[in-house]
Length: 165
Image (spheres, one colour):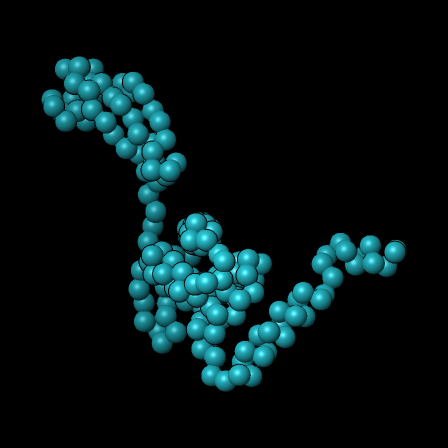
């Protein structure tokens, strides 16, 4: 690391600690040439993710846009903004871990719906109505029936208990 005072390239780390909620490391350093002390931050470099829109357009993934959409869909559902931020964090992490740097808006919507289904059925239906562009009451009914089927179907592992009991 180059000293901001004398541009010497050798320094020693005096102290390291997590910063920015664990997303970066703050280091206090001392130049071995002039004893000047300075602070550096180390962050993981992320490669931008390109979102392919429904009509073929492309834009850079914007976590705040996704969070805003979730907040709107989840108004008055009892879900806390912190819970929704965790959903966005999880989805962004999942996208960063993929080998492909492109993702369709459809895939992102499905990832959101998977998480909302377990958190709040009302939020799930509200988000689905916008994301899937519901055109009629039958679209709502089909979604609600899908939720009911999922709820009434035995979970993996429970079907064995039902057969024995």
